Length: 363
Image 1 (tube, helix red, strand yellow):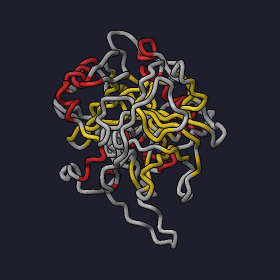
Image 2 (cartoon, rainbow, N blue to C red; image 1 turned 60 degrees about the vertical axis):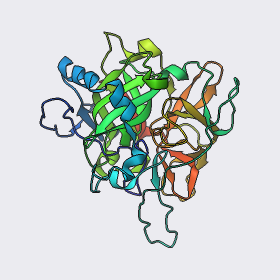
Image 3 (cartoon, one colour; image 1 turned 180 degrees about the vertical axis):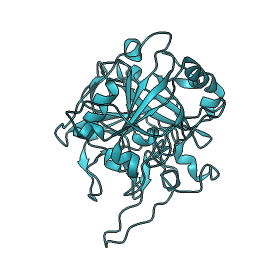
Image 4 (spheres, rainbow, N blue to C red; image 1 turned 135 degrees about the horizontal axis):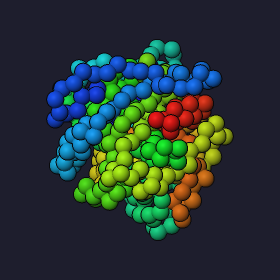
């Protein structure tokens, strides 16, 4: 990424995703990025890049067949890229990220740009929570249920021939098909798009898929992310295909989404961290007050959180009701600084993210 790299499922997680060809399917030509078709009355919406993930029922079927329980169990959080050295030899975003999001090194305040490195796996305590959720925690198992336990799910994708995981959430959209996740869980910055992209809402222990799985049909990221991996725009919107004729929103429900909200305040963040001490089988949450990026490298806000790789793209909600599990998504898990593994950063949802969402919900 530009300033440094985020965390796809830890490093922009994937940020490295590979293109349109489906693994296990006959190789096809990668389609060029296309600007989304949008009304001429708004210039901001034209700076959105779209990718057609699958065109036919056969394409979607190949993705569903690809993700066997065994493959899902073996998929890596991108934070393990430091040991999957054959995935890429650098370039784009894959070469420099890891962690609960991509982990970036602390900026050199003397003006010299710091090198990006691959920090060690994040460690932390794997807390269990009481029936009543805490309003301040850096990482606890969510055992209260409610809407969030259905609308949040795991994302499985293929990048450069290797399988990875992220997190995502359904959102209230006109087409009833949209999920929001990190940009690096969809496209490798200026690099390639993810392949074999599928969303499993309410993912459970040992690969339980209580609400089925939904493949991607169209993916959207903002131009600044697609051109340079700008961390301020580490947001991806994906329009899903139906499953057995049903839209994902009709099966699991949705969360509200809001833009240009006031900064600071209380937030709850959710995801499926998969690096130790977590295992990716459980929904985990963090809760606390938001704070600005202390280094001023981004407009992102930070949330105390020890979630690890695999949590990338998980939703952050304000106005969250712990009893119903409903809230309003205003950010998501994106990256960490290497000198502060207990704080996750998420992009501010402003006009650019609104334009991205408006385009996706019309897809």
